[in-house]
Amino acid sequence: MCGICGELRFDSRSADLSAINKMTERLWRRGPDHGGSYSDGALGLGHRRLSIIDLSEHANQPMVDQKLNLALVFNGTIYNYKELRAELSGLGYAFFSHGDTEVILKAYHAWGEDCVDRLHGMFAFAIWHCERKFLFLARDRFGIKPLYYSQDSARLRFASNTQALLAAGGVDTGIDPVALHHQFTLHGVVPAPHTVFQGIRKLPPAHCLSIDERGTQRLRRYWHYPATLPAMAKSEDDWLDAIHTALREAVRKRNEIADVPVGVLLSGGLDSSLLVALLAEAGISDLHTFSVGFEDQPEEKGNEFEYSDPVAEMYDTKHHKFLVPNGEVLKRLPEAVDQMAEPMFGQDAVAFFLLGEQVSKQIKVVQSGQGADEVFGGYFWYPRIMEETEGEPVDRFARHYFDRDHDEYLRMVASAYGGGDYTRELIAEHLREPASDSLIDSVMRMDQSMLIVDDPVKRVDNMTMAWGLEARVPFLDHHLVELAARCPPELKLREGGKYPLKAMARGILPDSVIDRPKGYFPMPALKYVRGEFLEFMRDILDTRAARERGIFSQEYIDMLMAAPEMHHTRIRGSKLWHIAVFEFWLQRQLEASHSAN
Image (cartoon, rainbow, N blue to C red; front, side, top):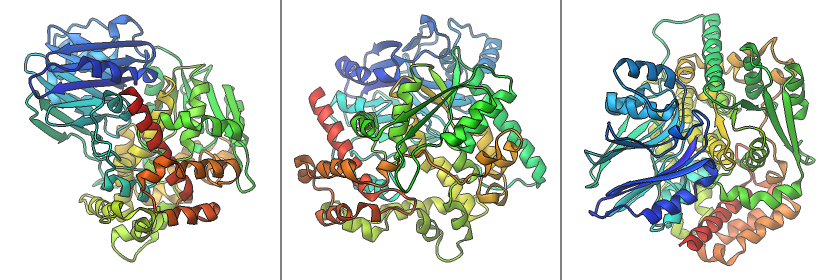
């Protein structure tokens, strides 16, 4: 788990090493253990390392293999690297390190671009072919690891976050109107390749990009999500057994593939609690678990300790829990926003940031339950969408998911930022894709292959890596996802959703954890906006920078300010928080980039 960056020139000039250094400096939090760079004419690479596998200097990056004429920077973890290493050794390859990084280099040399099909894990990497002078970029199937880039006629730059690209300079920071529409319709999600800045794009999940020093490039999708039921029906017991086996294996691999201890972020929900139970089932002892809570509001509790405590006690974990007062949340909010590669509306982004700080003092790697709701149908809107029968698929989806309909969006933004109903067009296109047996299958396919990438996957990566903490997400193991994708939706959505996980948990978790209503990482102060939090948001939207930028209609801002607790989205987000954190993110990132340049 690391931070990567690089530059490839198209104008016959050498790579700008000062830009590489600036980008690498902005990535140090992702990899505090080692930093390095490499250059070869038009190509420059930078790397910050978080040492998890093969802690020796032999696994430092950029990694260069002189015999194979290849150089690599890599962020992530390959869970089947030992099997691949054995296979490659059988083909005659000799290794000088003991980790997964060198395995990617050898795999690329042996199988070319097809190496990505063999990689089981989370990854973003860049390989430079020193002799043939071209760059190969790849991102994992679910975009667990980020890969941003900026490109013009003279060069391409890439990095693990937008902050690094902004630090290097030369980025068009004009607002992308398509991304803006997605941002405020899909609660903070901007699907690849767009970002809110015109000059920054991101490699889509399950894609690889080849580009040479003339700028000639080829983008290819190497993995497709399965969304049709198997030809031969399985019994309910067969499905449950198969899912249990696949999840058990996913959890085991994410615990074993590390040369440092692995803990669990224990929220008190079914998903993270199940990880603890499965690790205990696998014989893991001395497991560290971590929970965070916040102050209550009259409408909602600020912690889930009543659920996480019994699980920690049941399995005798080394449990750490942290209660954060509202004053600390407000004080630390700017730091959390600084670590967002893109604006995030999920209130638990701040929770993950504060939890990550404490966890990183104890441990370097944790497993987390993100992805279970998307894979096994845990959100309340899935059954509602499945019951919908009237209208086009996009209408049936939008009624329960869109934060704002297009008419409200046009009232929210200044006329200069208006335009077409871009999000409706995008969602309609995805829901029309073939090889799906029902609307809910199409919705869950879209959620797992597109929407989840930017929420919650990006949130977890950004906020844990801000503290040099690696978060592993076994529910997004692609073997498990491929299996669950073919499971009948009626089985997944039974008993309010996630039935296969609930059935698995019976007898190994308290019934109170299994049968509780679906919860979210609670931070009520950012949902029920009042007091000092309301004043904080008012001040943001009344700054000179916000007024001069003029993205939002003043009439719309005044409406939200007059009664912030009356304006929530269909999935219970604060509309005032949305526009305030978006504007605050722009202010923080642009001010930082101007200072750096």
